[in-house]
Image (cartoon, rainbow, N blue to C red; front, side, top):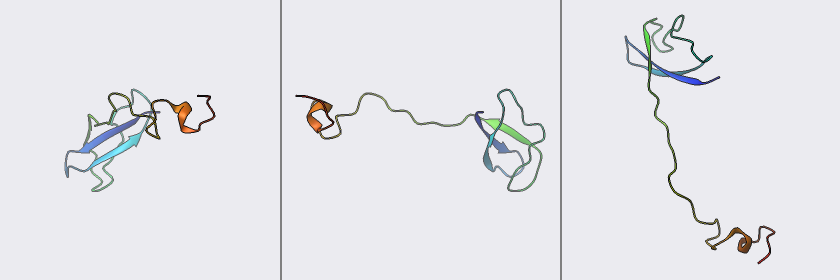
Length: 70
């Protein structure tokens, strides 16, 4: 089940709800003020671009003592 983010129309509180795909805001109340008027908002997320260096700084993992042969 995906995690959706909502915002309360009354107080502006943002909160997350784990619910089935396609489910709407029907029946949801704000956890801060209890109001029923909430709207789904676009969530922010993080992503990594590029590649990270080998953990030990060596050009390959085999040289880091991970069991590989050099």
